[in-house]
Length: 263
Length: 285
Image (cartoon, rainbow over the protein chains, first blue to last red):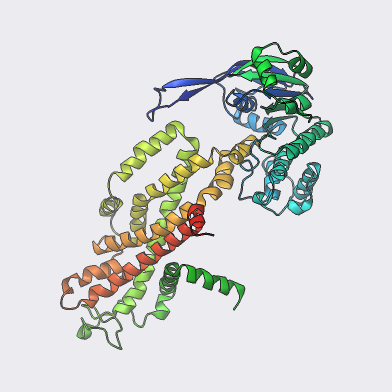
């Protein structure tokens, strides 16, 4: 059984809704009838151009937004109809790493409080135990104890992304959606983060949905690749299959548009 | 001088109006807190032979038509102004934060109802009118006065809070907190409110000026604190009949109201300049 099973998932956003409700002027099918599986321990790369619905799909899979129709199963359990407390329990198992390392950390909290927040929410542990755990997590992502009392604005983009990853790892999740985690970083820092994600996957046995518009990064990290275009998955297959023998015209144009850079 | 004193001195020389505002507010607060020790006489002590006396060395601000010492009444009046003003700001801020947060955070139908129906209804007639109607209905008294003015004042805060929450809830750190399984309460209180509180504080400082003025208005109309408690507004009303023969009866309380309103406005302006990053950039900070 796959860890994540997505079936016929559709998300429609209304356009220009009137203030009195109803009467929407139009609709966007951001995600259109998507079905896919993600197996335990694999990395599914999700590629596509801006506005193709990648991020929306990532948030739907985590049940951060409700789909218009369709189903998402995590470990066999349906998320779309899950109750409040059930969902809260399931949140421990699945996390997200965001694109924007400047927007994803609360500017008013210290690193210690940011990384310990999941522990405060889910685990009843002493302040000391919490602090030890936070220090461990920070070491796991390549930061040391000196960052604990500092604020997010004191860090570079790469360091902030590491803090965000440490927060996502705090509850030992099984599954992480990485929503363009390196596209806001410069190439060398991005490569470090990609390597860190690969390392953490080995250490913690993580499953990734890795969203990116960059073919080289996805090729490096993913075991399988799904290509998204205008809300639909146009092609899905092993990394080799997609990059060497693309079937769909859009996949070919995506590959052609990518310069060959060794990552 | 200690470093704190030096930086205080710098801040004061950069923004003299704010410094004046802070000093005046401090003065009014001292009056309010220590009125019984500061006031030279009992503010309710009637001494008819010395009525309507102009300012002199025994009565610095003169006496009113019942021979009461005006300076003492002003000092006691600061209590009412500060207490009512502060309570009204706290009360309307609380209502505004709760209602504005709910409307902004949950959006949709809740927001449409609160924003379009409730807020517009409250905004469509002046708050002071609402307060007059409320007090006329419930009867005068300090508690009713605070309640009445809070009911007229919360909408401004609620609108501000709603707009701020609306933009902040879309930020990624809020989504991150939700992804961690944080409750709505935790998201709002721990993540959203601390990030939007600065403009709200500015609004509250300026709102304090409005609340003091509203209290004076209500007391002037006889809908404030009942006599013999001294209030600047009721002193103005008492002195109205003697505007031409003993103008000090009106002059001093009016001056007190004016200075209090002005100083809170100065502080509000300075806070806005200090907290608003755009005006800070303009000032070259």
